[in-house]
Image 1: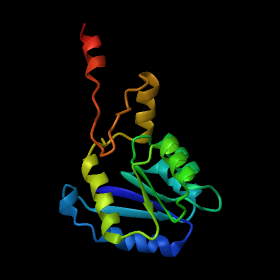
Image 2: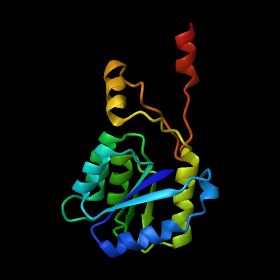
Image 3: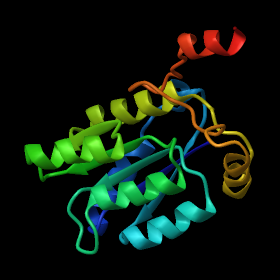
Image 4: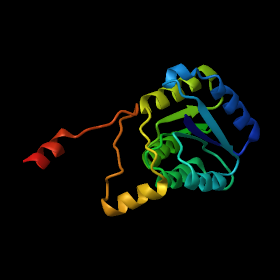
Length: 174
C-alpha cells in the first residue's frame, strides 16, 4: 500500500487532487492501492510525518503559514527519501529553481493540472520507487543513522532508481 500526503491551503484543491488520484490503476504501481491523506495546514502535515511513513508528498507552493519549499525542506528532515512534488499556479522561474535546489523535487506540476498527466506523474514516481520501505519505524531509522551515519541514506535518480557508485565500492574492496 502506498501512502500519499497532499498539502494545500484550499480544501477544494485537496478534494480535486484526491479524486484525481483515486482513479489511478493499481496494476500500474505493483498492484498496491494508494491511501491519500490531506492537510490544509503544513504544520499538521509535519506532525503526521513524525507518526507515519509516506511514499510521496505533494504540496502547494503558496500557503499562508509557510510556503511549499519551507514545508518540504522541513519534511525532508523527517523523511529524507520520500519523493517530493510541488503543485502550484505560481510558476515564477526563481521559485521553481529554489524549490528544486532546496528540496530535491521529483517534479513540479503547474495548476491547473491535467488529470491524466498528474496521474501519470504519480504513477511514475510511485512505480519507479518500488516498495523500498522496510517495516522499520522512523525511530529505528534515526537510531541506525546515529550509530552509523549515512546507513539509511539511499541515493536515487530522478525516476526513483537506486544510484550505485562503483568507484567507492572498489576502494572499499582494495
